[in-house]
Amino acid sequence: MTPRWLDSMATGRAVVFAMILWLAAGIVLFQLGPYPSLNEMTQGLELLDERMGYSWQDTITYLAVLGESGRRLYHTFLIADLGNAILVASAFTLLLTFLATKLGLAQRIMAVLVFLPAAVGILDVLENTLLMTAINQFSDVSHPVVRVASWATQGKLVLGFTTMIIVMIGILAWAVTTLRTRTPNS
Image (tube, rainbow, N blue to C red; front, side):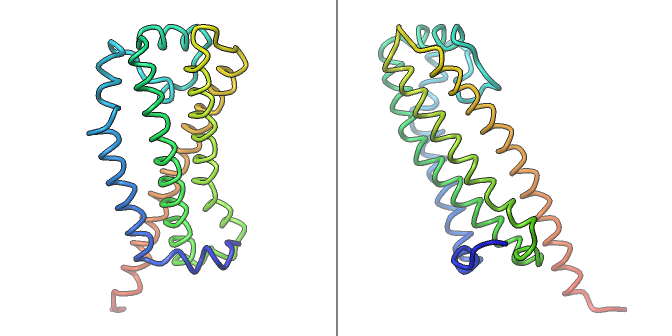
């Protein structure tokens, strides 16, 4: 039961535009922006927001390895990643709404799945905000800040993976449905 305003926004053109915008921003952020430099500075350690959870000690170790300039760079990356979270959530909410409409699911209870990307985006924003707080608190980082950030990261990764599976199934179902309606009966 997707809202009418969302159904009306989720046109093919809007989906393509949102996906291109997200991909372009992602290329800038992850290929040209601070991400490659962060990976070099961490001596092989995964960024905190890419791990399936992390402890307070993991966080302190990671931030210490980064050093002061690395922490500033990570903070900058997290700010830019806030924009990425919004773009991802918007693009995939539009895509899932488009697919739900094309598959005739927009008025069913399953339509609630179109809001999974928004949940991922909210968790990503929470995670980034808390990781920026941890950076600002270094070296006296609050245990609860890290605990909630880790939970947000885990939720983001699990719901993000679930969203990708639903998107792949939706695209496959739409392709099969489209082929069936376009193929003349023999």
